[in-house]
Image (cartoon, rainbow, N blue to C red):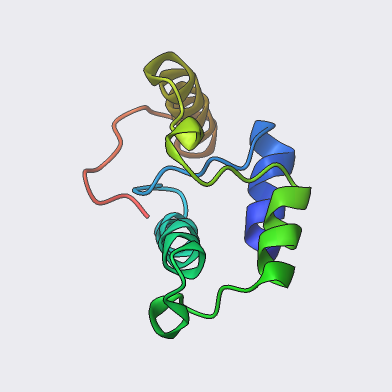
Length: 102
């Protein structure tokens, strides 16, 4: 949850892509929260991955979206990845990012 708050402070939203290269664990965690929420709302508490009203309230308090409205536009995603590329270039002196850059 703390990593999500940091992401929001940096990007202005809490819509972490499922395959977030900068922090793959955060992308996976966010996806699991959405899955848990769907199970919880459907009444299937056993597969809700610990989702509860308190977690829902905490996530919503930082602007977390549960459904398809969470999908970041391609333009916004492009801008974010371009910003990541600029940071990489500043750090490494080039923009030749390896395919498996962590």
